[in-house]
Image (cartoon, rainbow, N blue to C red; front, side, top):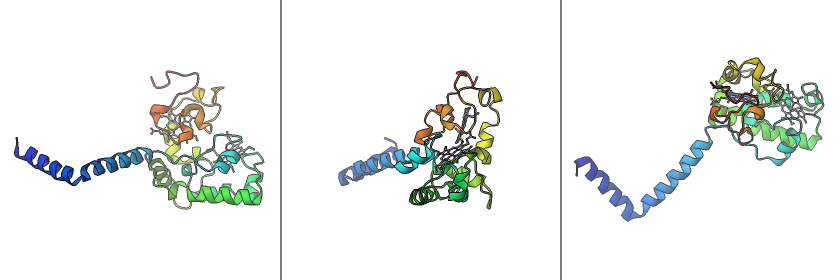
Length: 187
Ligand code: HEC
Ligand code: HEC
């Protein structure tokens, strides 16, 4: 046995006899699972948000925009004319949804993609659209128009879940993308 291996074996022996090795392994497993999850965007867990904000479109995770953006989007006045639609809410519901969005906003999240979105929005900048965030824009700039606007099953880049098959889980990894009518989009 090499000297290095002996040290490792010795160390493992000490850990095993202490019964802490199994514990350490279990903790590592948990850490790894959490680490994998936090690579993406935190999924929406709030039922009210899912219901009220998932009616007309995919319920965008609060971690896709900075708090400044949610502050602008989620006021009684703003919701009366929400991208041309009326998305008014009663006062209590609005307050709850506003607070949920702000607390889970990109700049308050430790999820990796949210961190990137937060970094991609300059101080004072409050984009009203996720697709205007520089990081998101850059990721989609090479997709031909015909696959988005010209694609009857997508129509707009705003419809994340048409192409991102795990968008509702907060997963946007390119390996999970499938563009309707263009199965070979990445050739
Ligand atoms: C009555 C329908 C309706 C409801 C309810 C609604 N929205 Fe929207 N929302 C729209 C429309 C229409 C657009 C523009 C979509 C487009 O351009 O394709 C939009 C766009 C957005 C966008 C910008 C997406 C992008 O990057 O282009 C965000 C963010 C958003 N909505 C958040 C919310 C939130 C949060 C709620 C819940 C309070 C909500 N919406 C409820 C209709 C609605
Ligand atoms: C027309 C289909 C389509 C729509 C709609 C769409 N995306 Fe994408 N998205 C893609 C493709 C394709 C890529 C991979 C681009 C590449 O790597 O060349 C991508 C990449 C991404 C990435 C980077 C993934 C990575 O692995 O680095 C993020 C984040 C993302 N999209 C978020 C969104 C969000 C949020 C929305 C909605 C506001 C959205 N996308 C709407 C097709 C789409």
